Image (tube, rainbow, N blue to C red; front, side, top):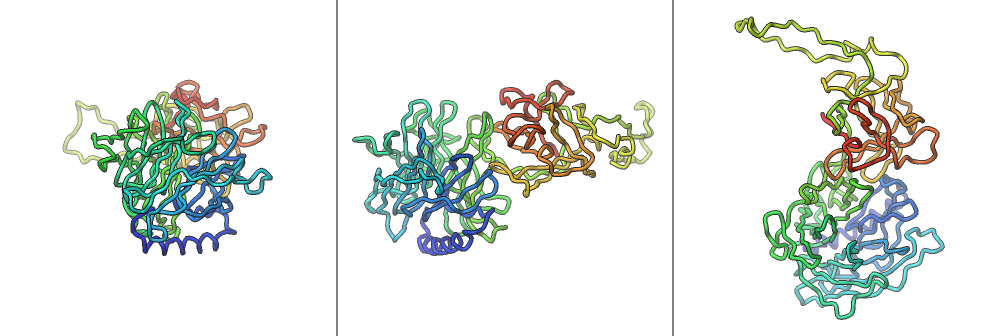
Length: 486
């Protein structure tokens, strides 16, 4: 929450109208200041400013319906044990024209409003600001330290410092005699995460609440201690305004803010945020989910995979996934290098085309293999989103076909791979494609024929240099990983 107070007030009115107007719609990811995504009974939840929030059954299509009392701004949510802790700013951030903020916590056994166990506890105040001090008690974020079990909260805005306090993870109350610690300036909507011996403080920098003119971006510093100091990539302290870029505007969205980290699997992570404006959604504030990459122990937002005409190369050897068909040579007029006529004009060799080879391919199912990449038609794949088939956190499912054809990659009941002559939309022909923390990709069939439910276990796997198959996901081996090359 930010400094443009007259614009903010206008935004709150517009946001309330949009949320009520779109309440009956599905596939409407409209939210501002989203909490870290929380999973409850197979569904995903995130809460926003003004109360309420949005829900997704699959991580891809979002709709309104999440409930959070108390109003206020910029909540966060975390599962601790068998309960969910919600923290939010009741005021502050210029709401009502002042910075006398209050931060509250409350618990619930479930996030599902339809559950008989759905009931929030009475909110407890854990921090406040009087409007005059060098801090604004708003924009709280939770970190349950996996190394110690201690529960920390960062909060604050540009109106002063970002502060750190400690809560009791069993009660959600402030630890007795705990004193606030200043850890950053020149940012807001902070978040704390831990990975590989490092604590990371992510802050939202820039201006918000101005639609397509918002300059929000997310920066980060890191420390070996949760209390700091948090230092960026060139040695600047965040307490002196430092911060390394994690994500900025791009691809017709702008103003990313309110970082959240979700670990899907070993080596598979996403970050959530809101974009102040999505140009293709009329400039509305929307939930954003991007792959989270780690480069030299620094978090970097990846780009959402959109498909295209690509080669699929194994990280095991660099061989290309291809149809098991005869290799057709390209005709050429070769000159011995010691007999070249340097006065003759150069005639480029044309790429091999699909029509040059497709008549040599079998008509039915064709198996796949891996082999040397040669930029040939039997090695080129068109990957296309199929949004009507549902999705997962960050993307819809995709179909993968040989470029220029409808021949589709499919999983088989015996955990092997084949290509069928025509894409039918069957679950075994739909693919989940996720960028990994190291930049590679994992590719998973939505379902395995003869097995119930969504596949969460088996991935495209290079069992040997030339032998693609399906096997259990293992981030520790390049057999499980693939590169997608234009």
